[in-house]
Length: 148
Image (cartoon, rainbow, N blue to C red):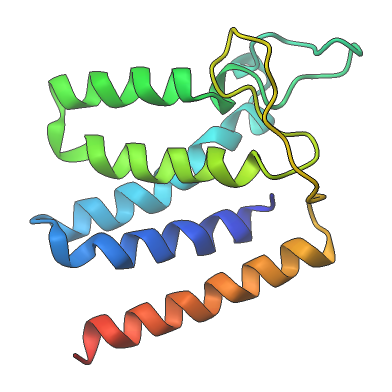
């Protein structure tokens, strides 16, 4: 999925859980930033592991697009920076969940080679509809949160 769709989904989750956390600023920005983190492997080639997929093309959705990585980092954060653990896990796992519906999919429990994939093509009209639905959800949640 595109960055804007991941942000719209992450924003909905951040706003929804905001009333239930104590440090709202850290939680909010933690969710938003973590929603974008799995795609760092696209920007920085050295983060790709394995470097190429079976067809020989650069592997964008490798180790960093797995719940294995997400859980590992969330546990480390829980041990050393507990205030960030929930926001990281929520944002990062929502990114993975959304990508699991795309045609390319993800390997949820890397190094196991099982691929969880769907039928949504990145950048398609279907993704545009999903994006706008989440924008409406974001607006609804924000209005409900701030004007209740």
